[in-house]
Amino acid sequence: MVRFIIEQTSDYEQFVELFVRNELEFSEEEPVPTDLVKCWKLMKEDERGTELIGGLVLARRQGEYIIDGIAVEPQYRKRQLGKLLLQKAVDEVRALSGESIYLVARAPGFFKRQGFNTVPKEGAPYFFECLTCPQYGITCHPEVMKRSI
Image (cartoon, rainbow, N blue to C red; front, side):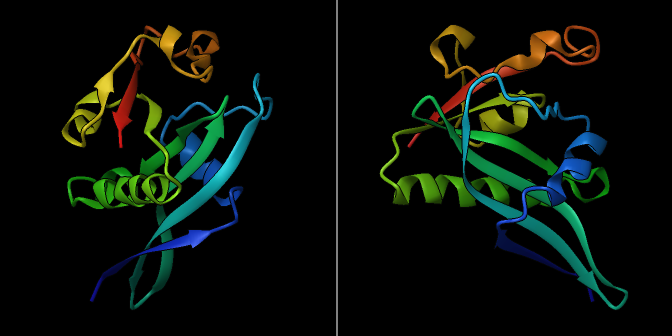
């Protein structure tokens, strides 16, 4: 029997390989200070053991909440797991009396279905480092998005 588990974690480093493997931009050097709020890991548990298959990082930049990374391994997508991860962040921001969450979306359709809307990058906190990424405009056409809470 397969079971999916979402747990809070303080181990951000475990997501680096996951995010890189899923082609999310990752940099050791942040242009603007980023304060980690919470991380959630998505685990698959079966008779063979437990495996990390997804994760989400909620952070703050310039006083705003941002999704600093969210990924689910491709073979586990379309099972509502990304939606469950995202809901953890929305609930947390709501509990912290936040008014909105920003993110940079490589899959804007998914986020639009979760209540996010495209916004001009100029109106968002500075976290749109995509312009320096070699994938930008070639294989990746990201949108800056915001969801009001």
